[in-house]
Image 1 (spheres, rainbow, N blue to C red):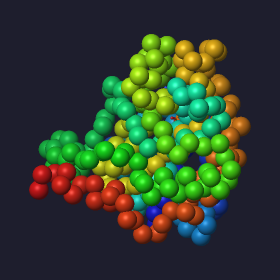
Image 2 (image 1 turned 90 degrees about the vertical axis):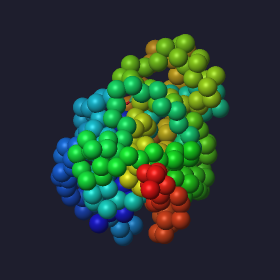
Image 3 (image 1 turned 120 degrees about the horizontal axis):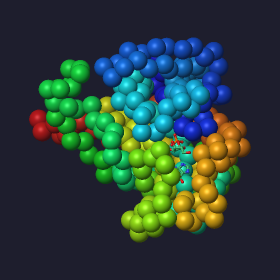
Image 4 (image 1 turned 30 degrees about the vertical axis):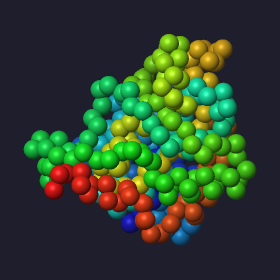
Length: 267
Ligand SMILES: O=P(O)(O)O[C@H]1O[C@H](CO)[C@@H](O)[C@H]1O
Ligand SMILES: Nc1nc2[nH]cnc2c(=O)[nH]1
């Protein structure tokens, strides 16, 4: 049973670090999910490409609830993810790694919760308001930071991610506004992915890889091609970072993630 999962974002479509990979189809109340499960470092790791194998699913159409529910069904407690981002912070350059610690949600049409009361398509029919002060697991963040430092990568131990609806990139005015609001990087997939993991009391952290300066800061036209190309250039480093991080994840969970529902339901 995999305790740890990796969710691969743009440019991360196959679990290069896993061996003896098998596929499991997990039925969830939100649909079926195909998950790869392999071995690394003597333990089972699950892998899920959030955009599908051939990047066929755009960010606003990803079935985040099915994905996170499926990993929970498999027994996953800890999720590491990658996210390709644009940078609003001149100190965060293309190719840099940012271990996210905060996010802001500007998405519009997504499904943000498992807790729809009586309408929930499962037996968790209660109302829940989870604390999300710190959206990322401190223990997973520490593992990513330690690994990035030891590997000698260009990394930033904190960063605020603004999640936009997409699939278009931003206007110059939107980036100007996000910078005033304190965002460091911008993407399209951390919400509701991070929220849903917390709602199922799973630990979640994301390593953002800066692929470009954001609209109005970059002198070039923004292209998804550039995003995927840079992610391809970074694929070995990303693999080493994930492999090393996994070794630093404590066996015992001492973070608050595992008790996220305590007090959230009013009982
Ligand atoms: O966040 P990931 O999945 O890395 O994908 C990023 O890359 C795409 C834009 O090129 C968007 O989907 C953005 O969210
Ligand atoms: N929203 C958004 N996502 C990205 N992913 C990679 N670059 C970008 C960007 O500039 N904006």
